[in-house]
Length: 499
Length: 65
Image (cartoon, rainbow over all chains, first blue to last red):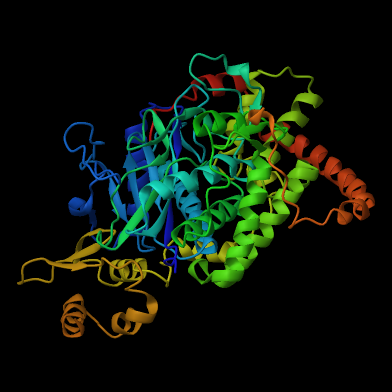
């Protein structure tokens, strides 16, 4: 049976300083430091521990160490939060990696919490900026000038799953799920093409994918990324690092993106998907789908036949329904899995009959309504910077400027839950242990990363507590232990006895 | 030619009869949507950055992952 689909989201946000020196690295550091200082005055800075990071390991079985290894900037700001998340500067962007969660619903809650953390950070940063200057953060994936930054998803998979089968079978979903996960984009950023070559497309990211499979994440981006860095027991697990998605403003879109992908991955793990929808030319197809808001163009399948993106999606949904019958959906959470299937069907039905009818769920449809409505009202030609401004401002995280907040999107997260998730970890994964220890023993945790915590409890050498099992260290396992251990020393002694 | 053949559509999950029955509601919903859009566009006029050209021109990001 498929492993529980432990998952998480990493979002790199766009950042600009208005009315001041526009250095994105400095601004990102200031943003994060302002938040950390305001929320954790009483505790010491807890650093990120890079022991576990191997971004150059390739899932196909080799390592690029030293040659093309993505750089890891250890000197930049890197904070671990009590909700189990990591908040840091990556390249020239602020990035939040959510804590590990077990369902699409939890993923949306901690993704929303990340947005609220960024909003709070902008507010706190305002206090230390010169008069008239402002840090503005966008939850988007491109600047409209050919520069892109990611919103990555991560899913836990069994190590024994053959990587070749995974790549072949997940690609059709990555290429066609854009019809409901696309965040929408005014213009085109294909190299060598004018901006108005495509007036409006489904995805922020599709223009930037040039390979079917590979290790890169910043250039020649591949549809399936092979980074082999499980952040868990490498004998048992893989972490599929998905770089192909858009950051969504719509909660339902994030929910469907994670929910449908988790189900498809479980099906592949159980060898229940098959090759029916395998694509002939995925790189061409990902652009064709993004560039076709009519949703009528067909893409080529490997057997030479053709299908629309919606037809591929209907086919995947049909398979998923059968999988639910044969295997159940416990690995993604039964209730969430059922709800994802139902909403998946509704969104495809809506897109097929009248895309406008799902403007409350799908970002590219919601954004297009604003762009087209504004163009019509003010008689603006396609290609006008005004329309690109609407595109950008859709993703503006300042509540008083954000157009997505005004676009009539449905919400599925209780704002109180999002607020609570800013400081509290999920109870269902090892993130619980990480977050609770950071909150309760802030002076004794000297470093943290995904799969360990390092404690300094005085006379002993530093103590590393490994967390190689993503589903251990949950509230069920350790809540009582943490509740009843007044000090980190006591906690470690009792953990040692249990071991 | 093989390249021209369409994959047959899957029909299992869809009930086409629902579409016809839903038609009057769709029209009503369409009018409601249009009214909402008008309000929304009024609001956009208020919150949109005043100098859109400069805003768009100055929005340059470093590439990331």
